[in-house]
Length: 179
Image (cartoon, rainbow, N blue to C red; front, top):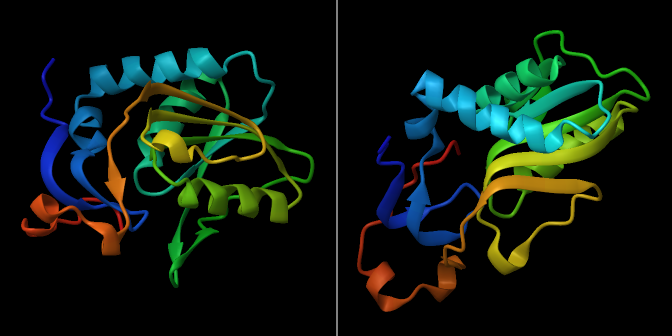
């Protein structure tokens, strides 16, 4: 199925980096049967990692986390922005010693994943793995201190805002992410 999820232009990523390509996971995940299959594939890559629950950073990770949790038979909770930072709300709890897998749609720098890991650790839990649909970190692969798996690794060039190539700087920027 062609979803049109790989976009071309000038994009400011949630990480603050700029890119000429953007993978809009929501355009894939809107197709429920495709989302179910993709997330089942991700869950299969995580199935041998003992865990108690799944946690995702909102917004992009919610569908991925829900489906991975369903496939693994685990509960799923999510962290969401409040006053500019990720927090647990809605009565979600982390029990001391509880083992989590962080599920996300796309990882570039891994900032939201790291914030989510810090929430779990701060409440006495442990993150045993991170799984995402798309790893676009390239040669800047983040170290989350646990196993990191993805379904797809995209080597898309990213640029610091002050180091844009002229052809990208000439195009108006779009912010398609969740920030």
